[in-house]
Length: 276
Image (cartoon, rainbow, N blue to C red; front, side, top):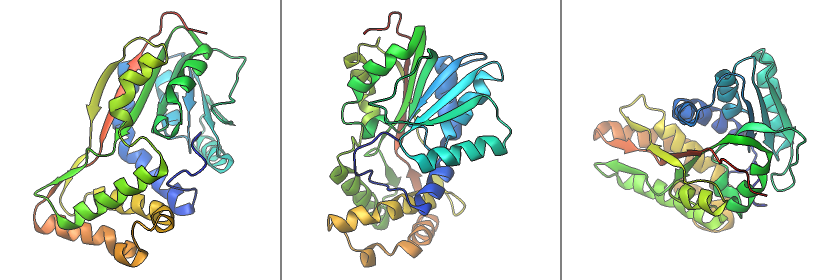
């Protein structure tokens, strides 16, 4: 991903596994946004901050063999993983390229520009969107899905969940990432010179002992532990990361708690005239 120098979640093997599991967990929410935005057969799509290729794979299904997807990411290891995944699945309509979004250029034009959980890490997301929109064909689609990190809660409230939520918010806040990029999508699109987007919000609402939500929260916190330690926001001993998912699970199941994971906001538009 094209991100600040200190991506808060890092590039560890644990983070790679977390991203793969997160991709599957959010797949249907993201596919819904892309369908609403109008991705369809034969389109050429540019996926910004493609990571290990989860969103690119969704787009490739929607555009079919007559279409094509180019995924762009700053991480060479992520791009190599994405290439291996596409090859293993026998998918031929995807390419992946290593590039910083601020420097990315192409002689190709695209029918759609998409991304998930990328704008929150950009220092000037509107500037980047405005520049990259120049690679869109007339009436091309712009569609992004971003998170509102603070919109995460549990009913009835749990002391353990509240501590975990607080640690996650503190880590994101200290990294400089925009914690509520979902809520800022409309003004970001407008600042980029794009038409006012259509938008929809969704989130995972989880309960019971079999939910992935507890591992989702614990794995995210695991990836952020180095940042939390560097900033002295919490100690490893206090977190107890190895047992955290199980403790969250046991606590939620015992009290029949319902966990509302962070809100995911999708926004899409079709700029009739691409601005320089």
